[in-house]
Length: 89
Image (cartoon, rainbow, N blue to C red; front, side):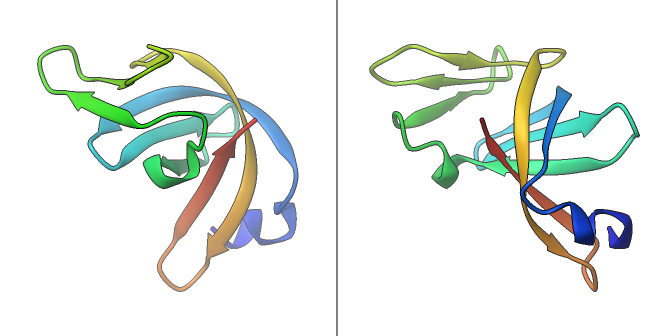
C-alpha cells in the first residue's frame, strides 16, 4: 500500500477480481488491488446478485462482474491497514 500512497488522484485501468455486496475489488496491471465501494457509485443504487456474483444498478442496469475491465482513480490509501480505495472513473 505504501507504494500507492503518492498515487492518490492518478487514473488506472484494472480488472474486476472480486465482487461483494459492499463493492468490487480491482487489480491493476502492477498487481496492486483495491476496493471500489458501493457507496462511491453515485449514479445508481447497486444490488449484489449472489447467483451471478454481479453488482447491478437498480435503474440503469449497469453491471460489474469478474474479469471486467474498468477505469479507476486512486482515492485513498490506508498504509497501516494495507487498504487501497478506488473510485470509478
